[in-house]
Length: 141
Image 1 (cartoon, rainbow, N blue to C red):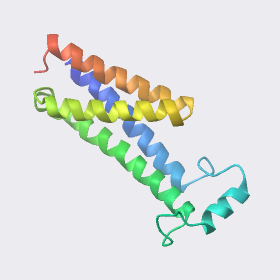
Image 2 (tube, helix red, strand yellow; image 1 turned 30 degrees about the vertical axis):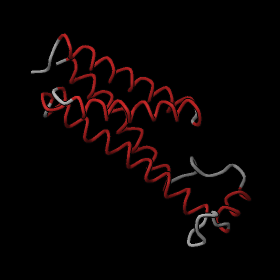
Image 3 (cartoon, one colour; image 1 turned 60 degrees about the vertical axis):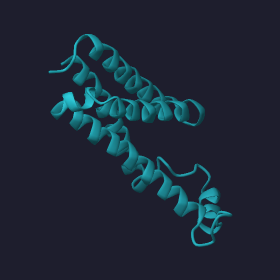
C-alpha cells in the first residue's frame, strides 16, 4: 500500500506542476519576458531551423508540450499507482521509464529551472525512488 501511495504522491506533484505550467503558458504574465522588447523580438524572429514559425510561437509551443508531458506522467502513473499497482510494480519497464522521466526532469531542473519546480521534482523523484525500494519489502496487493 505504501509504495502505491508514494508513487501516487509523486504523480500528483507532476500533475499539479504540469497543470499550473499549462495555465501559466496561456494565462497571465508568469511566463512572459520581463523585457517587453524581448517578447516583441521573439514574435518577429524565426529560428534557424524554419522560417515557418517565430521564436515566440516556438516558446509557447515548447511550454505547452512540456506541460502536457508532466500532465501525462501524472495521469498515467497516478492511475497505475491507485488502480493497477500490481501492473506497475511487476513491470521493471514501467518503473524504469517513470524513474528515467523524473530523473530527466530533475537534471533539467537543476541546470535550467528556478528553485520551486526543482524542489518539487526533487520531492517527486524521492517519493518515486522510495516507492521502488519499499515495494521490494512490502509489495502492493
